[in-house]
Image (cartoon, rainbow, N blue to C red; front, side):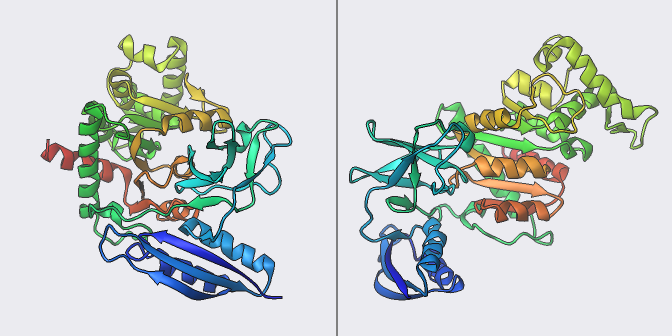
Length: 413
């Protein structure tokens, strides 16, 4: 038996290609449509509107189509208030909970549309009717009895509009390629970092720059460039694992990274022990901060983070040696610590770390411009496949990227 539903699209649906994406999604998912009404704004700032009748051969297929087009801002006409149900236990959502995207989202309570706070992908939404508020909650953070939004009615997702300022961040969902020139992208990144540093110094919100980095930054020779960016006030938050911190401090103590002489250009005798001895020494001192303050660690990324008071979150993995003091070994605790630093971030640079790139991308709302840099094109592709479509993919090695960004910023200092 055929099923149908009328949906509406409002906003900048023409210049952002949203209408075309919705219609294409309907057809690709197996449905058909009639455009009942299309009203196109006459100026860039004037909103457009479309009213679409979506048809499918079954109620289940129609539900699948509505689910697929909702992230593009398509909402069912005449929406009622959102529905919710009590969480059955701590850390457990109701079976039919609404799973969030990382786009700006509203829910309707008592006839009023209210913003959902703390948006990121793959969470649930908890509402508080008494205070007329809603916030996104990870599965591990929901408590028994919390009112969790279920179904799809009374939920409105707002797609991003293209920024008026034309730079690399204006063109989302671009293909990842190792053969495209990088110069214009790096120039746009540096310009954004310059603007954010000025805003951060002026005390404005949303002006922090986040770097999520892997140990390849040290191995490939990007340590000095990232240290300079931190010292000059361009980086305010660092996400990393045990390895980046250990090899950075190994480089300071022994001039090696994973036993490879950074200046000599060769493996040094017994070099494979250096990172272990570095970790052991810092553990004996008690913390990275004390190792810097006492002069044991003098230069490098971690030393600059301590001196510049950069907020560092180190999330461990099962293969870590040591680990260093300060590394969070519980993954849920590490996720919460990373999530707590996201407010105020205005740009995220995900550099040479598959796990940290995907993890950070999952935590970021779609409104935060993101650059994913890796020599392996599968990393930015994987990030985009996970839903972080706002991420600009850049296929190049970490050291070259960081040096080029530092050079661009230094030239305009």
